[in-house]
Amino acid sequence: MITTTIHIKNMVSRCCIVLIREKLEKAGILVDEISLGKATIRFDETRVSRVDIRQVLLELGTDLIEDREQQLVEKIKLAVIELIHHMNNVDSIVRKSDYLVEKLGLSYSYLSRIFSSHENITLERYIILNKIERIKELIDQDEFTLSEIAFMMDYSSVQYLSSQFRNITGMTVSEYKAGDRSSKRPIDLLT
Image (cartoon, rainbow, N blue to C red; front, side):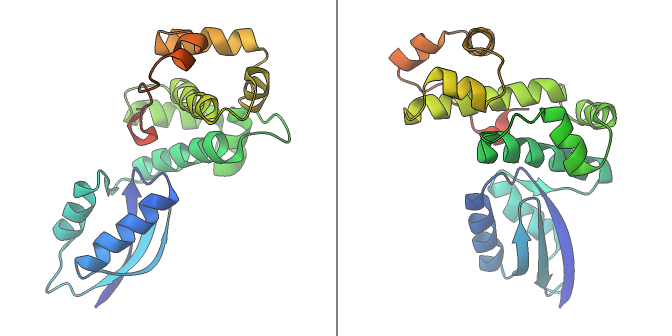
C-alpha cells in the first residue's frame, strides 16, 4: 500500500467530497483525508494505478492536477467560491481582491496573471460570473430584497447589480424572476 496526496480539479462543494470519497473507495482506493481540492489516499499499486484514479475522477467531472500553477488556479477558484457562495459577505464588505491576497498570500496581479494563463477568462470575469450565479440563487430563495443582495454581493447600488446582471445574462432581474429560471450554470463550469 502506498499513501499519497492528490490534488483534484473542480471540487466545489461538500457534495463533491462525499461523492468522490464514495467513488474512490468503491474503486479500492482508501481515503484517509479529503477536503475541497485534495485527498490523501492509500492504494495497492499492484491493483490500482494513477490512470485508474484519474478515470474515477473523470467520470465525476473532475480530474487530477499535476502542475503547481494549476493547483494555485484551483485554490483561487475555491477561495472565490468560498467568499461568494458560502460567506455571503454579510458582516462586512470585503473586496474580492483583498480576500484572495490574504487567503493565498500572493499579490493580486500575480494571481490574476496565473489564472488567466490557465483558464479561458480573466480572474475578474470569473469573480463576476460567480457573483451572478449567487445572485440568481439568492433571488430564487426569495429571502432577501434586491437591495440586500446588492449589499451582500458587494455592489455599490441596485442599479449597478442590475446593469451587470443584464450584461452577463442578457436579461433583467425582473425578466429572470418572471421566467423559468433555468439559466443557472453549475459553478464548476464558469470558466
